[in-house]
Amino acid sequence: MSRTPGNRGSRADSRVVTGSELTPQRREETAAVLARDVRVRRGTAEALRGVSFSIAAGRITGLLGPSGGGKSTLMRAIAGVQAKVTGELRVLGVAGGGAAVRRQLGYRPQAPSVYEDLTVAENLRYFAAIRAARIDGLLERVGLGGQTHQLARDLSGGQRARVSLAAALVGRPRLLLLDEPTVGLDPLLRRELWQLFAELAGEGATLLVSSHVLDEARHCHDLLLLREGQLVAQLTPSELIARTGTHDMDEAFVRLIEQR
Ligand SMILES: Nc1ncnc2c1ncn2[C@@H]1O[C@H](COP(=O)(O)OP(=O)(O)OP(=O)(O)O)[C@@H](O)[C@H]1O
Ligand SMILES: [Mg+2]
Image 1 (cartoon, protein in one colour):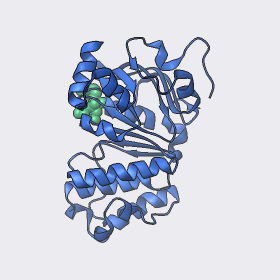
Image 2 (tube, helix red, strand yellow; image 1 turned 180 degrees about the horizontal axis):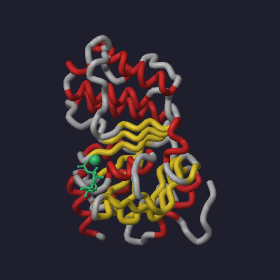
Image 3 (cartoon, rainbow, N blue to C red; image 1 turned 60 degrees about the vertical axis):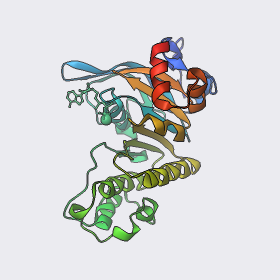
């Protein structure tokens, strides 16, 4: 990973609360994504207002924060599908965002996209054909083994969300960008999906998972907290708890903002 002399990534912004379990240098050396002063203009306003951070490879990073904070915009920028991105963004060692490394990315947009007139299995085979990959066991992994022949239009919202998740997993991408993959799911299914994410990280994948449910922070190895287009903190869940003195993630987030 190359480094710009004199610029040390997340260290550059002294207003961002950073943890110490991973040093900035170690973070950069192992980074799957490195962002420096990334800005995105959407409409008349800036959706991202200069964010600098790194995402460690082989770990689950939670992208958390209130609605409108810029989570989806950041995911889109990393996936290489967002216009008007400025600053430095290195994805899997390649400069300029995700477009050049798209084959190694699995991106699940916030609005699940499935083909209504195809069955669950046909939807997945379609995505697999594009990537020249196989779908072995993927529907079982997301708990849809019993729905393979059901038409997508007849699925519940949560089932539809999981088809979209399975599509992102096709071809074993090195970097998974999952935008609110657990929204609308029941607690049992949420827990199963977080177990799946842990398994995927254990298999070597890097995961960036967004959620506006701050409690889901406890399933992540690292956290990025975004608010109003700015990074509030990059730390681990245990650092967040230690720094704020509470295990209540909503309260921890509030205290962190108050401490800044
Ligand atoms: N298509 C668009 N055109 C103009 N502005 C947009 C567009 N999409 C999003 N924005 C703005 O960009 C900002 C960031 O939105 P974004 O969708 O990234 O937030 P988010 O953190 O993902 O929110 P949520 O938790 O509701 O999904 C918001 O102020 C939003 O109004
Ligand atoms: Mg969003």
